[in-house]
Length: 498
Image 1 (cartoon, rainbow, N blue to C red):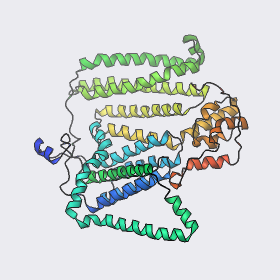
Image 2 (cartoon, rainbow, N blue to C red):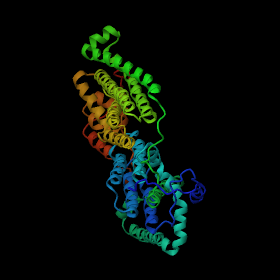
Image 3 (cartoon, rainbow, N blue to C red):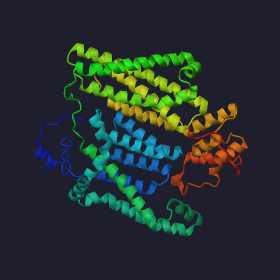
Image 4 (cartoon, rainbow, N blue to C red):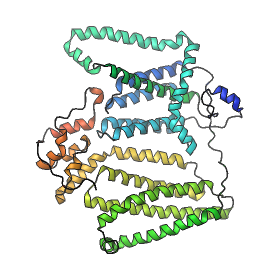
């Protein structure tokens, strides 16, 4: 990955002339030559893959399109660095969720995470400013690559067109000989029809859109290789202006407030349910429910307080550095205890009412925030946090990928089925809202509960062609082959609003 570097001083007017349309990015200058043939081939490969493999529904086609696009970019960019390879692997792993998971909410989030990882892989970035550009770099590069590609065609003439001529000839040959062979054999004709389904005008428009976006993404990645941003991220920012007298009292008050809260949490921990019912007048499950979301917000807002004070505080003398470490370190450590309190509340709440996907996601978010606070404490020891923004983004992507990879809907269904076997309590209405990911667990239920949970699966058809093939949907159909799902009148076990 090309590092951000310092450039010699260039007059702003000259930079603006060299960077049409983006004078606000003087550190990102366009290449002096047009796009080479390899970059054009990369864009062509990605465009064709996006047009013919991407489909409206999640399926294996998206992963194959991403694989082709990344392969085309690496064909131009060459062997990646270890860091770039890891980010690209993350991008492909998120795309793989399109055929590994069936939940409708998983794929859009995974697709956005894949684009984020792919863009950071090519654009780089380690500070907040650098990562913001890194997240948008491929998209901006795709737009800026248009004159670069046009310049490459003009300068190369017939040579630059050769790859496209070759592809055109291949398509003509494929059409002619494919038609003849299809007419000669009915089985082969059916096979080709499965590969190339009937297309309507709307489908043509859709595929053109996918192809153009994929081609621009690949060309944007190639553009970043040809013209890497020269942002200098190693220069220290402007010196802080907050004196100890400015932030000492507000942060100190927060530390005292958090200390008092942590003290009460220790009383709850040792006093248990009897203490809660005596002091709060509610059950332990209600106590856990009412406090979790507030504690989550406290955790997030405190992170902003720590980041702001650490950025703008004056830390020239050893005394100023010591006070900053003590105050922010105490705040971070106390917040870790608050995170532990929130996690314990969610644990007790799910013990009372069972798991839902939302509860699993927010508890995973809390665990990630705990990791973030540990990194904040580590960076506070040296008062240097240049590595921290990228580490937060990387761990966030890794945590989300791990949560999706473990199949959250299957985990939730497995737990609730096991809980039903022990307590005979179950919310079949909620379970019926889950996707095919949960089916292998739900078939373990008795006939009545199974039918209530899986009634929506009866006669359900999603996949239209091989590009929409999905492993979770395949496994769901296999699981349903050995059990019966009948029409029954279902009653809610208990409210799904909890």
